[in-house]
Length: 124
Image (tube, rainbow, N blue to C red):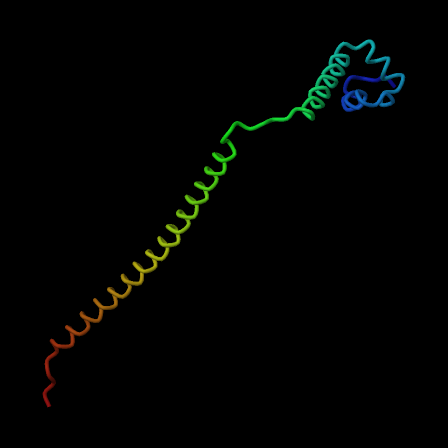
C-alpha cells in the first residue's frame, strides 16, 4: 500500500516529537513529497512557538487589573438594576390589571344600582 499525504496528516505532527511516529515507507514519502515536508516544517515552527510561550511572562499594564475589575462591577450593578426594574415592571402591570378589573367591577355595580332605582312600583 502506498502512503499518501492524507494518510500522514496526524502522524506528521507526532513525528516532530517522536522519531518512531513514521515508519520506513512514511519517511520515504516525506523525503520525496514537498507538501509533507512543508507540513513537517510548519509543525516544528508551531512547536517552537508554543515552547517559547511557556517561558514568556506577560506583565499587565499598571492599573489594568483594577480597570477590568471596575468594569465587571459596573456591569454587575447594571444587571442588578435591570433585574429590579423588570421585577417592578411585572408588579406594576399586575397592579394595573387588578385596578382595571376593580374599576370594571365598580362600574358594573354602579350601572346595576342605577337600573334598580328606575323600576316602577308594582300595584298591589
